[in-house]
Image (tube, rainbow, N blue to C red; front, side):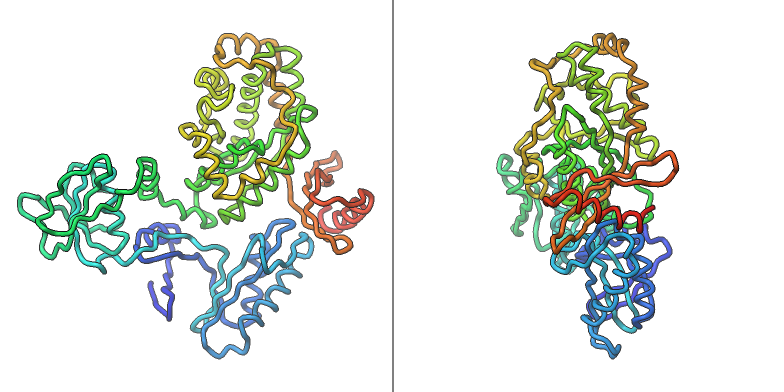
Length: 510
């Protein structure tokens, strides 16, 4: 059922997932939100929001309440509602270290009070926006290739009813206009046609048979990569993945804290996957700041995408040592990646994930040649997704800057001390199998898998100084849960920090 009130349309549907899929194809909708509904009184709102907050807020998160209301008589203002509901959420989550941050919260809970009902939601699903289909009249489009398809779609997005002709399959366009019509140029343009659409590029400029009508070339300023991205956008219902409870693919992303792997994780998330971040800690061969960077990156990705990127860490330093002591030094990176793949596979299978995400860009570093990738992956029998494989470094950097991970990724660390001088670039599968026979790879993978722990962010204030603490839970033999500090963002006296954390942890988590 669809109703309208003021500047909002309300859709009630049993199949929420299907409703969102359909609504995202309606031009003119800028965004939508999946909301829980209650009566428009403070107690009802408070009860529903506090229940939602226990699922939505994570340990250490900051939050804000964003309340709006129409002009009805409710006995409270928007600010009254924000204050009272915010206090209730803070009290309901007092055991989780959450706090209020009105200027830059990690998470926001939205409340809209309209026409006697309160709508509670936690995210906006971005839609294609544009103008309602048909509101700008009819155009005829030549659709012979991807550029023609994108050109027709862009004109539909701007409110045009489009008739098409050409060799390109237009089933994608029918998702947005089930009544899409075709025409035969030999019979002339359809009645009431106001313009002609062509997918010409600068390299393909030529005469367009327009019958004297205006010719529109929406893709004239676009390169082929932009066209490919728009085709992917037309094909995919990417934003529907923000709905909680839908069936979505999971993927485990191996993340290092460098530039590439955060971008790969972001792209897979945007493509519709739930991404779990797995950091392989190099122990004595690495830098403790690497994990700190990874947690900062996860926080930035969550802020940018409004999706969760849980972080896990595994002890990979022992594996590096075994490889260094038993294998050809030139094959250190290849054997390292081979081991990481297998740990990630086991972790993915344990978490119901369908594949592994890597930040590989072909030929960028020694371990990312075709022959090395083949040797590293041989015998794995598990999908590896490499969304950056066809991008160059500058393109990857551009994306990293756009999503806000670049400045974190370039923070200086000591790098991996296990990287050899002269790493192999044309690894042989036979040589890899020979070296694998010198180590207990299965045992290494099992031990590394058993070491995996989740990293939690915890925000604390001590003597007026606010800090982020990264915590890893360790399961003890007594089955109780203990917590250790991995690193922290501001310098304090260690004893004071640990004393404060100890009292909070014993109260809240054990």
